[in-house]
Image 1 (cartoon, helix red, strand yellow):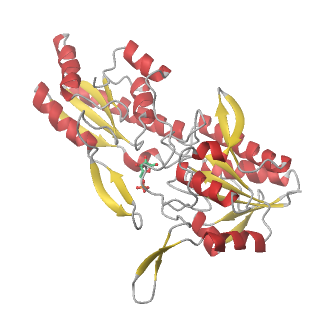
Image 2: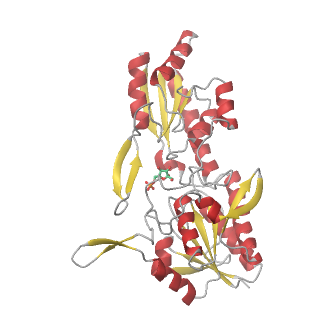
Length: 379
Ligand code: F6P
């Protein structure tokens, strides 16, 4: 019988974290289950820092709030945790056993892990050490395996679409190319969907290494019919055929981990298009705007569905799974399936290469639709 559960929010924030938390808390309360929240994701699990969540106070009025009321950590891999001793020496240690002990000592029957691919990988690793976990797929990138959609993604697409609407009028007024760089790591979902929603002329995504000449040609074709402006969406992970991704800087992901921060893809494309078309080009980097602020109605509903389903699964005793949307229906899959080829327990994380992520496939409706209406995909 599940009597006491805890939630942790891990990885980069998205709009919808709080809506999931609220739904779990409400469903828990309606079934006589006590609910807690670890602070700062897996770091809270390690330090055993948590608060009680209740719809009467701590988790009240949060549905429309951005961020996470229990915070989140982007660099807290407890299987490979950075430890600095008094002399300043850095080592990376597997501290997961401490987390397991904390969960057992305080009697949590289930931990809900709200996060992306790395978070769910760690959740799976905890499940193999006897902890009951249930994952909820989060990320603006929409790249978690086994689900059609992650919470936070729809809000990011809406923010990008609004930006494109605003760039449209300034592009037209000044006869310019306006480039918008959006997030997504090595998945082009945000770029592709916002390009369709925002009426872009070119969309460059990581799944299709681009030929800049082809994009420039599409812009020149528009010039021929009197359209002296163009809108270009560039995914942060987009790169030219035979070339490399644009890196803003490398971060300390830990021993053996190259944790790169993408950045610069939009500026690079803008400069090249300016040269090739003769039009002035400007680049806007949308950045963290995509992650913050109030969730869309769609994300509030999706997050609520995910949260209540997660608690329902706990009540049914179905652990070590991820809530998903499969063919439009709310469902769940084994975390083992989500982790995919990334099997090794406690494998070093942080580089994206090890993760099992869902990228845009060439037979996806969005690709076909974009091509049908003449959005140039750089090929
Ligand atoms: O994975 C979500 C995401 O927002 C990516 O789209 C982006 O590349 C990255 O996180 C930025 O991460 P950070 O918060 O560590 O700068």
